[in-house]
Image (tube, each protein chain N blue to C red):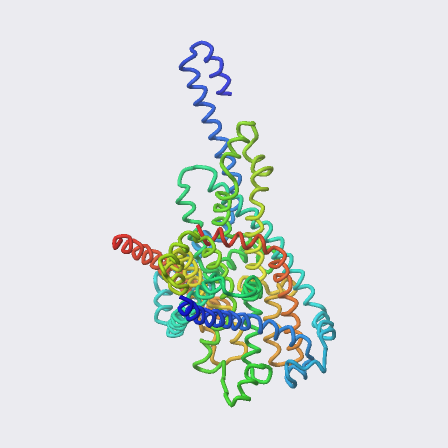
Length: 287
Length: 327
């Protein structure tokens, strides 16, 4: 008995070590490029090309940040503000709109309900690049092209949020609660605002976070819509600066430091709101 | 109003009228609910019309018309119906076809790597032997918080000789790799996409695995299945719906390939402005100002996306029903 026990134990220990090693390598793969960005942001231009990435003889993070905000008349701060405006405001409003719609899909019966929902799901599948040209043409017809609205209005549209909203409404808001509110004579919309929306809180945060990431990442739409640099989000601004870097290398440290600062808000949002998006992913994955 | 008249008549003929009152009340409740549903859904469907239906319609319309300049380009521009001419121009354009081929190859390399890699990681994390599990998860998930364009920027620098510590380290081992060479650009792009999304999909799978009932796993242990067999033959089939979902979204995103090659194009001669269908559309619309060509290419990309997603759903449904029959 004891011999079979020990032979069974040894491969298990070996397996345990292998599993941990594989996971550790994968974690290094995902972490090291971010670490490189962090270290590279502390290097001056000469050190970036010249010295080893791990040497700290020349620590110029502070001067890099100063350069970043001084470059091209302080455009970066402008871009950062724009990104925050597009992403935070857009995600908040977009999440409210999609979750309300998803809730209505779950709680109410009406004609052609599943056909309409099918349309929503179809919209999830449509590539953004397909919509960009017609959106641009519509925007230029209405004079909205190259304005804040030309980027802000399209990013509000989040069909996947409707899908999640329906799942969340099913999971978080029991129908008995609505029945009880109806018996008490409360109006449907009052019930939604006072009772259901509160129960949908975690789901709403999840949809908000998904959309925040998507808008912060958005690059194609602003590139098509905007020509005024002062309206650019960070992503497009960095893209443009990077295209100038091959000609004028003083842009390299600025692009790197700018990238590092642009990553921070999302990391912060994900760490602070961890509890919510984890539950949200479960809902999205299991159903 | 109707409710009160019914209430008056209810006193005259009690049994029938009570019924009628109830029906009227139900009807008015239904009307109130429909109104509420309408209010809750209107903002979304306005957006849907404005930024989805109208643009898709516009793209289809544009693809059948073209700006024509009569009289050797001296006369005023007219829009004329050209039928399928733009479509013919797109599908016979070798640069479009090569872009399509590039994306097909990209999908063939990227999607299996992504699905198998993230599922394997999730299974490893779910096996219970990994130390510091939540830290490992957070580390793997981190790239999801890095915007696509910045992920591409980081890797572009890591691919650039002179800046990249990776190339330097390889150089010390006498290995020279040109990450942006003729045969390496596509794998380099796959790597960027894999890096960005591996952790996210791992978390999706992990969440699904957590929902597998523990009794099922206990039963498989009782049956004598080892951890590897449990993972591959019990757990993996139970999260099939998540696998299909991840594969589907990965596919839809992969077909839109744009951000990474667009950025690498700034530094690599190997990536031209029509590297992928999305870049082709951008180039046709905004560099060449050929709207009908861009619209036709957009519609073709849309049809391919829908056809492929539909195909995947049908195929998985059929595999499901075959399995059901086999049981």
